Length: 150
Image (cartoon, rainbow, N blue to C red; front, side, top):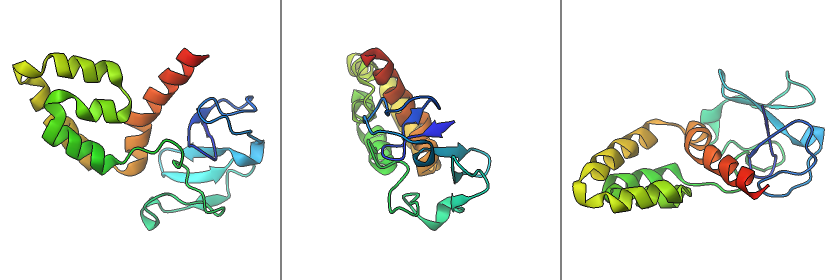
């Protein structure tokens, strides 16, 4: 799986421009994410680690002083707090860019169900690290938006 060096968006190997941010990509500029060890590797040399420990840096910086998730970064803590305190109105869904679910939460807010779900989602957001949060909650929304635009 390849990621854009600028925004962290998932890109196919044969594309020349990132579908999320429009950055021109070259083979050496994309990053491959190795899920089991949470390390970032260059696409040219899978044995060359750019960041061997995700806990060593809060923003997963690379040797070029860029972050893997630099582009449309959504803060995990902000999303968690919005989910816990305003989850009944779907504010966290709007923040993450999932407008459809935000509207559904807003419509059903009088039932109290979105408040419970929002609280649970907030706890889930807090238990994930930044990489997992981005991969599970931000990237799928960006991919859906990119596929609708093309």
